[in-house]
Every structure is written in C-alpha cells, then in structure tokens.
Image 1: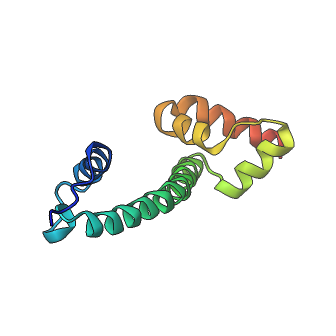
Image 2: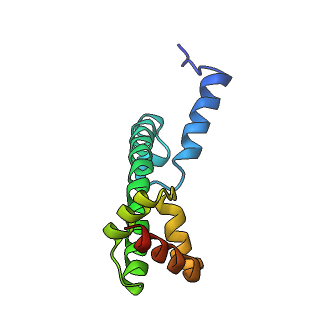
Length: 117
C-alpha cells in the first residue's frame, strides 16, 4: 500500500505557511501542524499589537504636548480645555508634531488658548 501524497494545492498551502514561520525555533519552522499553531498565535499577537500601538502613540503625543506646554507656562489639561473653548479642532497627533517641529507656532497656539481660557 502506498502513501497518499495529497497533490499540488495542499503542498502550496503548506509551503506558504512554512515560509511565514521561517526563523522560528525547532519544529515550529518545519512541521506544518506546529507551524499552524504558532502562526495563529502570531496573528493574535499582531491584532492586539495594532491596538496597543494606537494606545502607545496617543500616550507619546500627550507626553510631548505636555512637555511643550510646560515650556510655555501652562499644562496639557489647561491647553486642551482652552483649545476646545476657542473652537480649535486640532487632534493630539498634529499638536505633538507642532510641539516638536514648529515650536513658534505651538507657542502662538498656547497664547491663543490662554486668551480663550
């Protein structure tokens, strides 16, 4: 009795999976069943990581804005509240970029917020 070799489509699928787990340790890199388990787990980590990256970036932006605010004599919370009252609709990503790249414009923004608040 001879073994069943399955054919081209499963082989193509197996090769694709094993190419994705290249560099893993032990049987994870060359045994299809183990490779599938760690590949699923890597997809889960990647999904969660995409959410965590958004959270981390927001924290970084807030830290940068707060540091620039304190150089201009105010705090992050006061600036955000004053900007809302003044009707300035800039998100934290843009504010952080201004704080780092264009400190003069950020200083004008803090002065505008101080007048509004």
